[in-house]
Length: 561
Image (cartoon, rainbow, N blue to C red; front, side):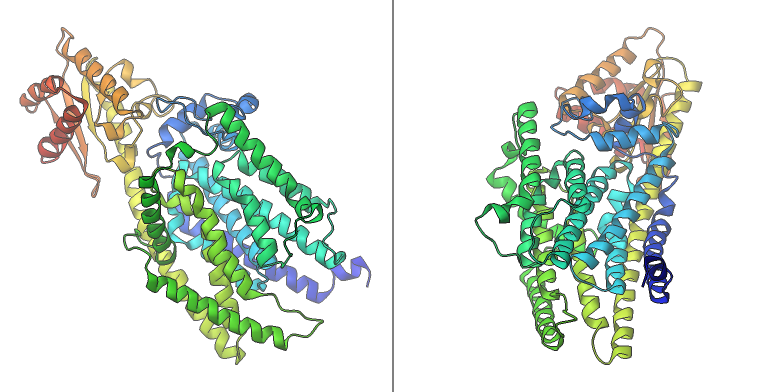
């Protein structure tokens, strides 16, 4: 059959249509789930990040490889070299610096692309059929633990490195399969897939440092799934050398710039204990959804072990029934690799992250999606075929429906906090426009809306002018961009500036209910006591008492109006 004939072969055309349909389902699922976030306003870190890159251009790319990407917008210099996220925010700023829509569309597109990569990895690395691989990709898209990475503009710092990591791993696996199919020896030949894998891995490293786990991911895949025997020889080591060299060079660069390789200074006995607790919550949240309050238990481990045992027994039966011309993929090996090794490697960098966040599991969550795909494959290929396939479809449908309902509920909270964020920015700009110069505005915005936002949220590009040049805006420490000491200096300076003006400008306190979004507004014109309470804030003797006084004023005085 000639290539032209092969292209027109009915089976080939049918296969192309099936693959296109599977890809379309995954993309449409991502779009349908996250479409409600497209016009969500900026939240939390978004204000500082978006404001910074609205003033930068792509000419900064060379220096972003040797400097912290967020510079000092948080009041300190972070140990993060991330040129590719920086580039993504510069590009989205071209479509409107204060427009959240381009940023959300990029996040959704990235999530959909990662779902496709999961499907292709499930096929190439786990040996799943198209239907089961598509189920894995679809599940990845629908997992509730992904919401923060997709719905939050700054969550891109986890979905973008995962995109490069997944792509690099997939290209390597395809190269391994090509070697086995065409040479049978595993000798290194520099095909395009291998070279692209190495280059994409370089992009992954310079997107986020948690991608340094690629080398063990490749070695353990070769050993467990591809069954490449470990040998102390150059022939065995050679395929991994470029990845090792890039990883070592990246860590050396970090050491030169920050005097730390991988935040090892953060390691302590207490951090190990926190990591164990955080990991337990992460696993529960990954598998069961929700807030991850319950901890992973030995019962959960027993269930996983039982599932892996069943898969191993069924796989052994498949291997016995397989003919030499139609070998069956080792599903139990893939289940061990993706269900244990991949998830452990994906979670390992959390040890030095310093805080809990569900988006830290974005990379690791591929492992759970592929394991579910393997379970689906086991049911799908069981006998009798019609009954087992119906059962597999029902189980998958129930799982996807449950996850999807959770995503919808979580996104409802994000939508509410985004609406509060937009309302707070608009209201404070209105106060600056209609009120006299020097007005003191005390903002009580929920931290899930404005954590780390002030003063960026009241400056261009989010407002027409820098409101802090006309009025004084203060908040509690949770809403301020920077460290406690800097917040204290900023807040006390604003209070003194307001108090020392001879024209006695007014004071306005604004509070937004985090559950309903309802705003409460009190001014000294409504209640003269507010001026006295604001002046008393300067009488506090420490950062802690000042912070407590502002929160008390908001919660016990303004919120009740």
